[in-house]
Image 1 (cartoon, rainbow, N blue to C red):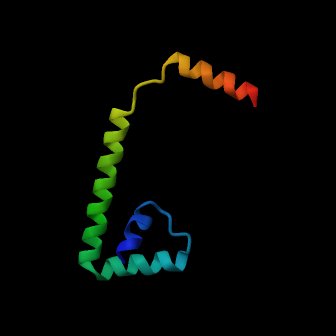
Image 2: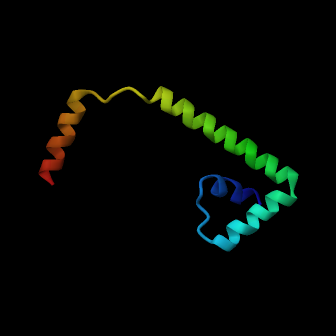
Length: 73
């Protein structure tokens, strides 16, 4: 079940039947549900930290270089 926890949290399980089976398992297995909730909280925390720390704007020179390079394509 462990390999599916991160996939479940990231909504990366394309098979609806498999998704349903995982959700049923979480409903029947408190340890797996707890582990999924802990992983989800850690992911939310990481995303929040990244959002706060990577929130500075790119320098104007980088914008200009990107525009130049896209015009060369």
